[in-house]
Amino acid sequence: MPKQSNFLPDNYDDFVRTLKVRIRSAQIKAALAVNAELVELYWEIGQEILNRQQVEGWGAKVIERLAKDLREAFPEMGGFSRTNLTYMRLFAETYPQPEFVHQLGGQIPWRHHCVILDKVKDPVQRLWYMQKTVENGWSRSVLIHQIDGDLYSRMGGALTNFQAVLPPEQSDLAQSLLKSEYNLEFLGLREKTIERELERALLEHMQKFLLELGVGFAFVGSQYRLEVGGDEFMVDLLFYHLGLSCFVVIELKTTDFKPEYSGQINFYVNVVDDKLRRPGDNPTIGIVLCRSKNKPVVEYALRGMTQPIGVSTYRTTAALPDEFKSNLPSVEELEQEIEAIAAAIESTSEED
Image (tube, rainbow, N blue to C red; front, side, top):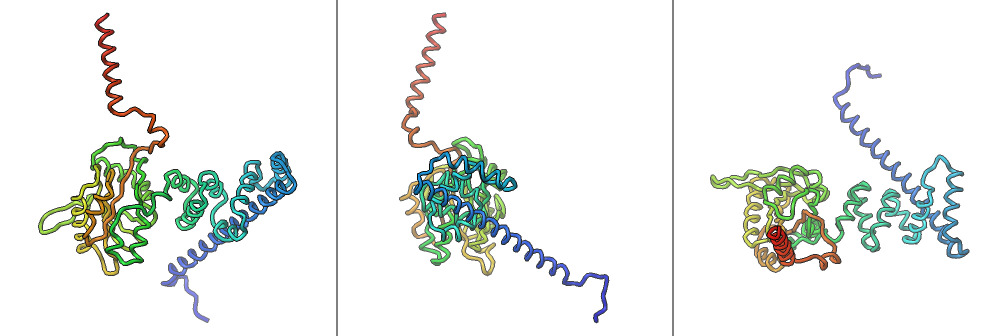
């Protein structure tokens, strides 16, 4: 029998670390199992309510009575409010296939389902938000933020030359991760601002900016110094993407996209590739983030570039619904109104 010692073995820390990983994994699996059981139960209750209403003509009043009876029968168990029972019915009606509940549906919390049922009407988009929730581990508040920001429509829409310069597997992944427009409303900036103000605001709200960029982006630095032939150049924002295994250079522009921007970002990408890229890293990607872009101009500017470059836009104020835009006065109409008011004030002053 080996002699016992009061000293911890050299590999004890590794042993504890391994056990912690296994315990956390078991906790997550247990929580997912409980959630899957709950979602399945709610779906079954919803199916029963739906069937009774369709076959036996039960009215809405039955749900109210059912909520009361279930709460009395199971006082220790929440979730049997009239509102939640209505969600269960809608859940079962929206997803009639049991396979859905046993697979994707059981992988996200019930409250997430309620949010998606409320806010997303298109079936394809519903499934997409569910899959992204599972992939990224979104909390309920993050899910609401992504839906309100119309993430589905913005993902993968950046103008790029990735298909021409990257291997297919990296090109497809890189394209899918970039957005056509980035929602920077959280910065609280006015519509027109200078680049340094925009950069400063992004640094102050880096956590929210990383959330908007998406999972996998790790912040490396701002105004990152690059020296070339004795000259100094500063990259606005430098990131590393864990999924793509590459550096990502972001140049901020507070104007419309201009062709010369592609030359600047191409230069930075080349330098980062030479000076920072390590063995095993994929080619560095450059992103020009500008106020707006003209698609044909961007396409001509990127044609012939050998480095992977994307062009996206951003907004710092809430987008106005189209139905309101037509009712707003133009700049010229506002100027005329201001001149008329000024003339009226001047006329009144002269009479006094």
